[in-house]
Figure (cartoon, rainbow, N blue to C red):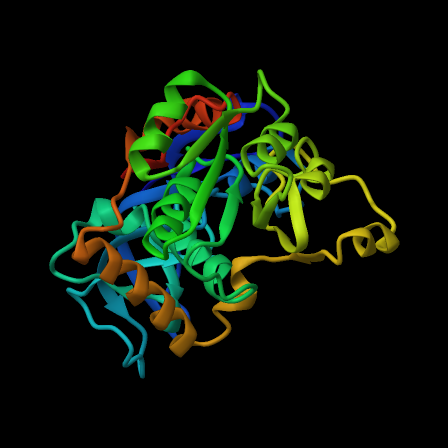
Length: 320
């Protein structure tokens, strides 16, 4: 089969498309013929060596395709099923073997390309907006990196819940996409101090809820942008890990600070399917729209460069 393989960590050039042995099918697994693989910053961190992985390695951890074989005893899926998955390794390949219990059935109303754009970012948006603060209509939220795959889904979902949505982006082109997604206030953080803008636009109050997948470059200013008794959730670090703070800093406004990762919110098949189906339902209802850009798998290195250079809007996919 064809796969993207990295023999060493380093720049995007270490990603090479080559022939690779088909993976063995182990107990409890299903073999999936891949259609699309998702490209995420986690893939970039691993490629650069910031997160340790065994080498040689096939990158990628999510995608969508069709089941072509299942191990003995597997009942969650069957050959011919269209499925999506996340948090499973080696997705940049024509075939993957993954735990059948982690596969998400794709509704007939969605294409595999649409389905591949949703698992990680869609379920992340779901838990961020439902698990840490039961946001009420009329409250305010600040979403960083709002033009990314997770960001655009968060903007739409927060708008659907009736929140006043503040969003930060890095370019003028991204501002328009985020406005179209429903943000009330879009801040170009490369030109303006986002915390000062939030305070100005809220007449000194600040925002009730802040979702930060950027990390180091935005984290500390969140403390200024948050309202009294506000919640800040850190769920990613595209600009690096945040600087440490003394817990006492949070007492000034009685702030709550949390850190999150998706795998801790899909701990069993029931929670996985509940979140995934909530995302699919939003798409089917029409209020949650998918924004994606697709490149051939052979262009995986180009995809990583685009992601690192902040040149993407929405979800980035590889067609297999």
